[in-house]
Length: 364
Image 1 (tube, helix red, strand yellow):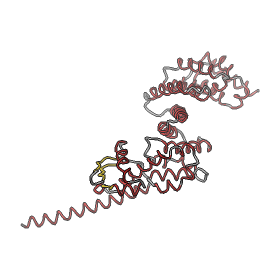
Image 2 (image 1 turned 135 degrees about the horizontal axis):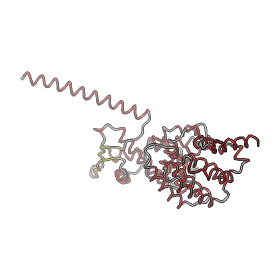
Image 3 (image 1 turned 120 degrees about the horizontal axis):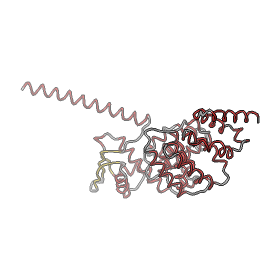
Image 4 (image 1 turned 120 degrees about the vertical axis):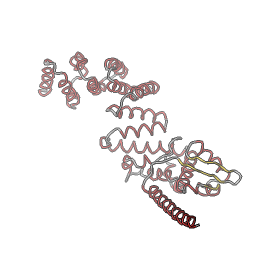
């Protein structure tokens, strides 16, 4: 009790001296103190001490202080209304305004379960953040809020991309082990179920997946590798594991088509540029599809922009000239090195041949 009185007296002294910067820093330390949060009436403290000096404080620091006070509101609607008044006060500072809107969005989503209003708010925040030239402290909280909404709405692509941005905007060590496991598992599911994600390399190289090592869910990492490599045989062998997850089991047909497309991409990538003529029979053998399904598979890959080329229906071959770039690990990079070495050897041989033929021409 004595310690709290001393701190309040220090705050009052700084206020009397109009040392607003020092006072703001001290207030932030004060509201963060777990003992103060348990014993003090911070809502009353805010109305009597902080509210009169709001205009003197750094706006971002003000919202940060408020972030520790907001959870004390028992009525979430009152908390939302309060934050709306704060937004009008800090509207000249984009980071502070975004921070306040994110706090409001968290209440709308988590406590009021109001997804439509949260989506409107996320759209507003996204526009505001586009005016910032660099990553700010509020980016991570915004990405977390947006990813939570997209997950609830079943928007796999949006969740995947936003959650990766969230993880990229924070220090991974600041997330507890349980949340790391949750993020890793949900990201893996989203990558598999998304209709637009065909580049799994970025996720496979992300340290968040390390949290699944030595856990009962490590099979998901192996499944992601199978998809990334277009390994249909492994996908089939792992059915007892992935079929135990309802979200995956009900999408078996879609996942089968997706891994077939990735298999086609892998076949194209492994071929040298001058040897990318694939027969329907070869594709059918690798994808384990019937011959009458191959043309539709290739047309799907072309329409999605995964590959570029032409289908020769008469000769039942596909001439592919390009495959969508992907984030690669050491294995495909090693393959590229071997192909570059082979190409360099061919160029040298051609150079020597031209030199020899040129000498014969000069003699004539």
